[in-house]
Length: 429
Ligand SMILES: [Zn+2]
Image 1: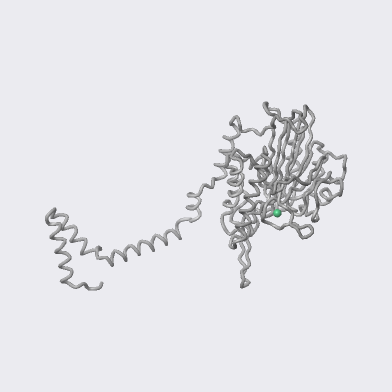
Image 2: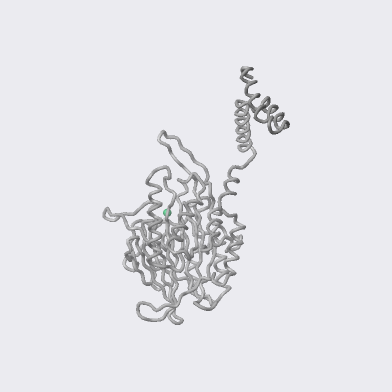
């Protein structure tokens, strides 16, 4: 302990004695004892430093930092999300419904409009300027599609994220997408499925050749829990029984404008990728068939991220609507899902994303007598690889599906709304 000049010490004590003596002797004794103990300033500083180090060590070893972060962030648990979901569905206005409108031909119809956001790829190269700039451009594009189209339901068809670039909690990026949709239309409703890039392994190669890689920090389940906690989310986890493989298999029933009659079934399949096998499973087909057998056959549509089959989805020239800029990259095995959709006879289209360079609808297998058409959504985000024609990059866009009932007659059509407001690649089955 460094020695203090005793005269100086005495003077300090005397000043206190004089000041406090006039009020209360007990206080004087306390102050003097304190000053003789830890109230020497350097001791106090040492004590505070020691306390700080001890707290830091305790934090590191005894407290799960992520748990603390999660506590303070608003990311809900799967259970919380399911509870919110049940609450929402029990409310009167929670149903997805066709709307009664007068169409361009002046006829009264019931219409349900879906807007597909395909391959947004948020979260690319967050350590650069251009990565976050791409995300901002994608947010603006999302808002423009929604404002131009005012859809009844948005479908996020997978590859919302590029998780191989995200060395952090990826729910932040998924939230940005939701924020952009809500900004454009606060009462927006959406349903989400996942692709092969939403939960793939993080991998970064540094300039000196060092490679850092690890599992994605955010799982499909984490993303679905976040998604479902929003009032506008119609995403379901556990929408299909437990034996069905994947995170996002479910069916949404779209009702009439005023009654509870179901007019359209919308199926969602998890085609895998990322942390799970890139395939359709036999159990998905069993679930689909069981589901269809439970109700009278009504028009149905389906979404998944990856095409089921190369042949069925192949480009067929002038019987298709929209361009082909690359081949078809299907799941490793579709286990017969495509044939099940064709055999069912009530599925009007399956739409996928995945191939950013394909943007067409064609009759399945090129068979113009088939009820089923197969479509690719237009690459909607500025993340992910782009496609060029004659050196010019394709505009980003969103594929629109217009389902209509005129009296009892069902029909549908599709087109792409670009971020510049143009309408392209129309298709009439
Ligand atoms: Zn993609």
